[in-house]
Image 1 (tube, helix red, strand yellow):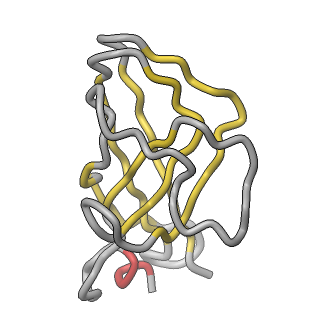
Image 2: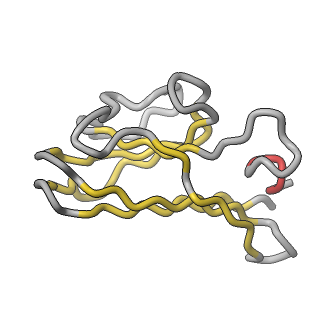
Length: 116
């Protein structure tokens, strides 16, 4: 099942990660980030996608990306998408602590999806 999510067998894979700047709480009906960051080197990008084993072979899809800020931003949420813009959001995480970045700072996000 995780191969469908990560694009091995899916026509539109969820392989993009995006960051947002204003989220404060999880909302189950949300279909996009509250305020997706599109500048300062922190725009949505294709992630490195791997499959891993958590319980059974290849049951986990892991998306990872490191951004380098080119300006000042605050990261408060991250999401997984199936397009470089727009598209569908498969998952979202509101960070426990906002991350304040200035030019030259790096921010790495890893999002794992475990299929049981």
